[in-house]
Length: 92
Image (cartoon, one colour):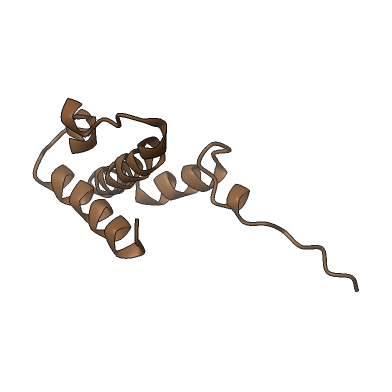
């Protein structure tokens, strides 16, 4: 998936929340969109999560909780961006 596709899916999730759809109405939860093999699972999860992220961010902003949402997101060990960024010790 390209970064453009990722951003489009996040925007779609955000629009869905604005239009009143619920989180469980994620189009990637439809039976015909579920992966049929292990290779497709990673792509499906990325698409599902991108849509969900957009939906959750829009939901948090509508409820006035956007700062808390991103603060919690960064602190969460399972969703932490810091966990994916390698740290390098630089000798002084």
